[in-house]
Image (cartoon, rainbow, N blue to C red):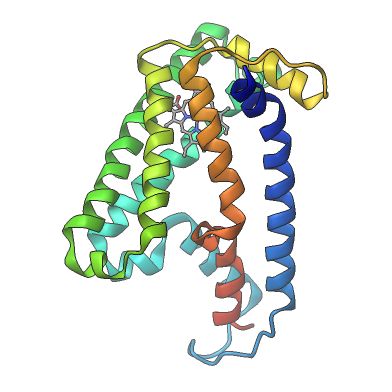
Length: 234
Ligand code: HEM
């Protein structure tokens, strides 16, 4: 079918090109931006201190923790579950027998770990995603500053999470199929696209999200390294 072939054989390469070109453009712009020395933060800090603060901000969202505790809990749990899911998705693309052997784990152990961690992360992130959407509607202050992009992003993420959870808990998806598919895709061979409808929808939405990242507010992620470097001058 035309749509399946487009999602499985053309869009992945397009996604890679748009994402890499978009990120290169953004990073170049950050690098070229005139960085006036800011004196907002009291006194100057050593390089080690500056990186300690940046890493703390990245790992525990310290700024948000000090500003808004209920939002901090939701955001931190959401991102922690997302990090687990991203690591878990490596198994969608390939298996890593060398790593499992080195850790003394057999196939059964790896599958159990994946079921427990992937399953819990899938449920937690769904709960947190719904909470973040609910908050946009329910808290007047947040509703006032939310624009169409904020709703679009959260609905896109929720649709990705729901289709992922359906594969995880309902309509079982065999990872062997996706591994063979990605191996062919990476080596530019004719790929057999998995026929599972939820996989295709999840993959389509996931790719839209990846292409959108360089042009969206998501770039607060790498942007942290730039903005905090400016605030904490050495
Ligand atoms: C675009 C590339 C992606 C592909 C090929 C992909 C593929 C898959 C597959 C095959 C599963 C089922 C795993 C299993 O049952 O063992 C899954 C689950 C899931 N995916 Fe994705 N996914 C992609 C992107 C994303 C993104 C961007 C997100 C989050 C925003 C996401 C969130 C989830 C969730 C929450 C689950 C259920 C929990 C889990 O198994 O980890 N996926 N995905």
